[in-house]
Each structure stands twice: as structure tokens, then as C-alpha cells.
Figure 1 (cartoon, one colour):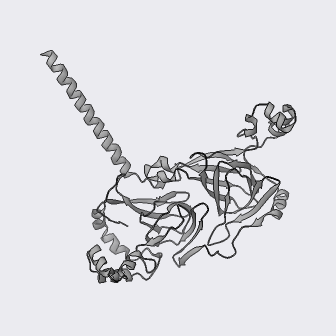
Figure 2 (cartoon, helix red, strand yellow):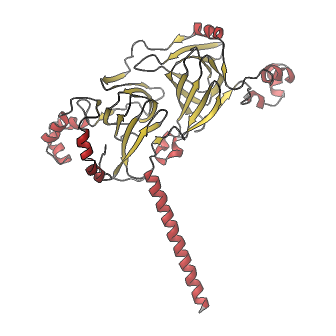
Figure 3 (cartoon, helix red, strand yellow):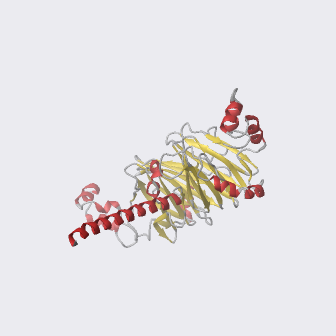
Length: 430
């Protein structure tokens, strides 16, 4: 009898263990579906690489580590640089292509090239429509100055690593925060390279006495004045033909595509209460960074992490320094809960189109209705007739940015109905 009970007991234990594992897996999948994989909160998503009294450098966590849905962004990173007035970021090179956008303040950027060639650029955020930006090729030594005596400098960088998803900054200098990469060579290599004894090399280049506190240092006004003489403004006094600008009393959006990098750069401002109507990008994956202000964003995407015809809404309350990713073809709507402005980077931007799902212009739904058989198609697509659909669409006379408070009470009354629709095929809750 005892021998018969032992196998039965083992089978029971194995069954309970299997049931427990299945439940744990189901719970993990449920928790993952409840998270918003497209939202990066500023409080816990930025990692500080360096910080001292003069400024800091920090990098956003890797996109592909947040969610498998963002795997196509594994070769892109966001870096933020801030510095106090009259400071210098010491010379460095990075194993990444860099696209710098000035978010506030002004900067003198110096690119150093072989044969004693240097390029000087003056960047600023004075343009109310579009902030200055500059591309830095991978491996190019550069340094950056905040020449303003009063205003802090804030820069956001889109980094495209050329070695692997990690970014490496190679600083020439030895400071209290880090060693110069030149110090990692064996002694005989710098001795032969500089035709000098190592003791002299170490005293001139690496000695602890006279070392800077870190890679962001103070610089005097005379040095700034000298650099300013060489710097040429990269500011666009008028927008180029490649710029696409849309705006009204509720907000404005300007986009510019760098075809060589296949990247879209955008600047968007919205007034409190404004709504950027539901829209989507055909090819570009847009990384949206909040410069100032607050906004409510809703993104519609496939439910869960599988191929499906069911959809759900991913919502977030955005504030300063938050990041939100908008995948290609995913409809999105943004409502400003205060005056707010954004910087955006669109990946895979060449031949990309922005398609609106509401509003007077660039509305792809109304484009269907205007075709020869369009109203018949609309009547088959929606519950109402084609004429009813077109009449509904034409009620909105605004384009892109509209009054987000319009019919708010009616929306609140219908909110319960909308929640019941969440998860249905094609449902868009906003």
C-alpha cells in the first residue's frame, strides 16, 4: 500500500507545480499587458553618466530593453546634456553618429578634423518655430561651450551607435571623474609616439595636479569671446524648402527630414486644452520628448504582444523630460493639459507620410469618401451610410490642432460606452 501511495503523491506534487508555473506565466503576461511599453517616465528612465556642479550627461535606457515591441530602435539612443552658464564640455569623440538639438539656451560647437581643420557652429533655441540642430559624424572630436552668462544650456541628442547598442564617449583628458583613454596604452607606445620619456608625457597630459573636477568645466569670458569670433551661425533665418510647417491658434508643428540619416526632426507646440487629432505615421517610428509642460497621450496598438486583430489604448500623462514612442501606423492623439512643447525624432523617415483620421485637411477617411465609389466603401466600413460619415467628418472645420474642450460633457457621458468598446476590433478610445 505504501509503495502505491508514493507515485500518486509524486504525481500530485508534479501537477500542482505545473499548475503553479502556468499561473505564474499567465500572471506575468497579464502584468506585461497592463504596462505601457511606449512610455518612459523621466523619474526612472534616465541613467546619469556624469554629474558635477556645472552640469550633467545622462542617457535614456535602451528602447529594446523596455519592450520587444521596440526592437527596431535597438540601434538608437537618447542622450541629454545640460550645462551651467559659461561652461565647456571637454573634447571627446563617440562611437556613434550624433544629432544634436538645442532645447534651450545657446551653444558654440567645435568639430575638429585632421590637418588642422575645425568647424565652428553657433546653435541657439531663439527660433520660436524650430530649434537649431547639428549633425556630428561618428568618431569626430568635438567640444561644446555654453557662452551665455546667465542661461543654462539644454541639448537632446539622438545617438546612432556604430559598434553596438551601447554608446562610448572617449575623452582625451584625465579628470577627477575618469582617466584619459590615452593612459590605457603600454608605456612604450606613448614614448615612441610622442618621442618623449613617459615621465614628461605623464606630467604634461595626465598629472593629478591641475586636473579638472570632471568633463564639464568652467571657462572664462575671454576664451568664450575668442571662440565666438570663429563660430558661424547655423540658425535658419527663414525656413528651408524641406521644412513642413502646420499651425493655427491651438498649436504648430514643424518637421524636417535628414535624408542622409533617414531621420525626421520635429518641433511641436500646443496651447493648453488643444488636441492634436488622431493621426499616424506611415513608416516613421517617432520618439517624442517633452521639453516643457504637460500632455495626455493615447496610442492605439495591437492588444498584447502577438499578431491579432484586437486593439487597445495605451495612455500616459506626460510631463517634462518624459519620452513617448509612437510606432509606425499606430494611431495617436495628444491633448495638452498645459502649454506644452515637444522635440521629436522620426526613425525610418524617408518617404514617410503623416495621415490624419479627423479634421478638414489631410484626412485619409474623407479621402476615401471623395473617390468615385468612396461613399459606398465608407457605408460598408462604418455602421452609418457613406453620406452620414462624410457629414460627420465635415463638422470639424479645424485641421491638425483643434479645441480639445469641444463637446467634453458629451464625451464624459459616453465614456462608459467607450470603455465597454475597449479591446474590440479597431476600437479607438480617446
